[in-house]
Length: 290
Image 1 (cartoon, rainbow, N blue to C red):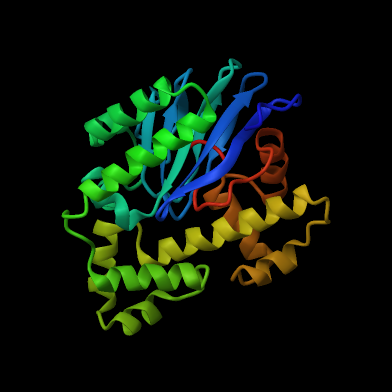
Image 2 (cartoon, rainbow, N blue to C red):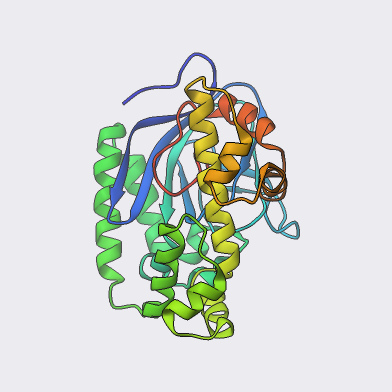
């Protein structure tokens, strides 16, 4: 597995792993002190730090004070978090958890974590202890990946008897993902045979966002990934074409969504992310912690 590069920033370590629908990537952050954005994503984010704690200077909910985390779980959100890198090397593992698996893996519905960053030990103490202990005991990244696979498989198997979200909610989430956020809330309700109000209530509980919000975050997620891939390949950025291809009305709509969801315009996000991320991981979560 690759070590950090000479230019600083955050670097994926080795290949992306998956245990069922849970994706993960190892990372190592180097370079001078700075602040990085933790961006909205269609998946919950779990981060296990292996040396220096993860420092969140600001959360999606501005009422939540800054904090330091050895292991963090972040619910779905529609505004960025701000992650402070203190200049010392940091390494860890970031997991992307589909919201409907939150009950299975964590024992709580994703709605309980919406807009929040929590210490994993406060939400799922046994899982937090097993993850961190096994990862810290592993002698290298290959062993860490094997340990992570084992812990996740056991935890998912142990949680199979916990209540699942209704099939109608799972169907609506699938349609949002398959359409890359283009499905409307009204169309989703018609498809699953529920009233819009009933679907909204269930989404708030089992997902943490409304159907409209999840579709919005999904569109942003795909637009961001395409934008970064285009920049990494050295191709010119065509924001009008990107907007049309990712379900936004026009370039102005795309720019407004980036300002709202990322806190900055697309061009600034590209510049910031290219300083921090060598290559975006291919799972649902963002390419940086939290």
